[in-house]
Length: 578
Image 1 (cartoon, rainbow, N blue to C red):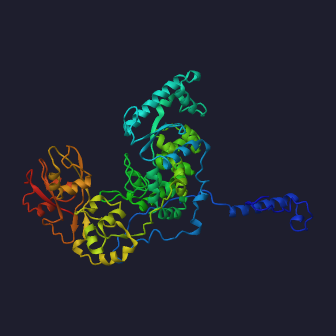
Image 2: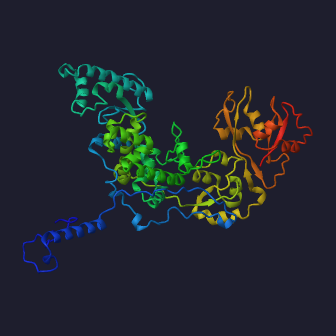
């Protein structure tokens, strides 16, 4: 009997040599065998390697609570890069292949994506069949003009795709008469003739499946280098949830480890959370910050999401695909196909939006894991960035970044890079870091930060910030008018709304109005303790009070109005905040 490659061990039940009479020799033959088999199985359960770990039944949410009342409570975390793994939670990346299998049917996809990630750059476009990924028609260089057409860039790509479609159509017409094909048609014919044809993707539809894939070798290499800043901390987060450490490579596929990544459908951050999904898994997203952009806070949300997917679907290939396609979508896929095998679902599921990206997401992930592990083999001289040794400090009250720079010695630009979750307006002259926010700072800067924060005068700390609101642009209204109306600046509004040209406003457009600081020394007289409102035709003091969640009496007293019924259109009122 062979155990883990060791030499054969004699078994008393089967060895023909004379044995000393002992306990087993006194038992009936089959009873002794059953006892030994039971002991062996018990021993095997103790030594066998763990299978796919089961995530917690109800993953806890890391919600911010209890803003500290003293400076000593500011510290909320140690460096993410301290080695605190427990031995039982350590997982060797090389031992996770059983958790992330590669079915033979998906091998062509695996080979294709390995080339995309390691051979073709972002200046090259691969022209290929979008189902049979081993069918590659050619590669277009975006920097070189086509010799025949003289086109370059994406014009050359589109021209190449149309040419391939035309040539494929000619080949399909002669599919049953290969001897009549010319040399070019025969070459295309040979690409398809030996492939196992899918009923969903017949060869005759090949002209409709011509696709261009931008190479990613250079961006993938850069993403792997960037990963050095965060991946150890992410692996620790995933180990705490008893999740496979290979999942820490997922941002390679989603964003190349870029915290500022934003997809055309609105997915944001390194982990590419959609707005609703981010909020569902505990991320705070409002006018002041977007925790989807914080690599480590979002990593905890991603761990919860992946654990939930795995618990529901019972398979890592399906759980990872659900990260892209959605949990309900994958549940529908399993039901419609009648199988939980990823290759069966990829081949047969015809659900809405289960398109090229979703079909290939799992394979892209396992290619990414392999390339990451063997990065020196694929990218000569690659070096990972140094890990970011950071701590988090919770800011009790809203405060300006310039104040932190002045008293705590923190450079605004470094704060910006370490805290991508903060809205860009937080780093403007009028901007504020919201109270309760966990600020990322470099570990070595912590002592100076704590000492400096204690010296900040109370007058320079905001008590609160009013909630952001929205304003619908009226006909002929300019950004200057809106800024005056709400007591802010044109520049601040433009930054808060991402307006590159403040003059291009259209009637009906919705403008976000940032919250306003209310300081400890605010008395409400022309300072920052109020906002301005210009009375419109038909507005009463009661309607205006409801708009700002206050009372007509407060507004009347604040503006020295003796008769609340006598307000005029165009009149400018001060609305106290808080």
